[in-house]
Length: 158
Image (cartoon, rainbow, N blue to C red; front, side, top):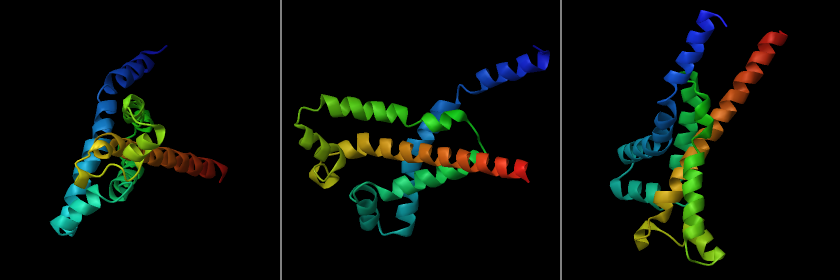
């Protein structure tokens, strides 16, 4: 192995330690903060609160996470971007399994209308929403990598 190959491999392993926490925070806290900022800038505060917390399945946050996940790999490429959904998924699975409700009640609590902020229930905001945003972010990075592979194949063929 040449000296440059050793240096390159060593740089890759040392330089990635910050990538997973960075993308984990970006795909959860960053998306939620940016969604809040943009929604409050473009909507009255009562409507913005309703859009962000009471619209089922959180479309603003999911769409913003998808957009960031689609655009960010052009500037910052890490293979770890595809795996940020794993930690929120594990938290969701553990929370879902430890909840002492029948299965229908759990589904309603985590994914349905059974838990809303106006009822002082924040399970979906704390557990389900981070999973949705990280899954959307990861799906967009996977889509971006598939598009890039297709472009490279097309360039090689022509």
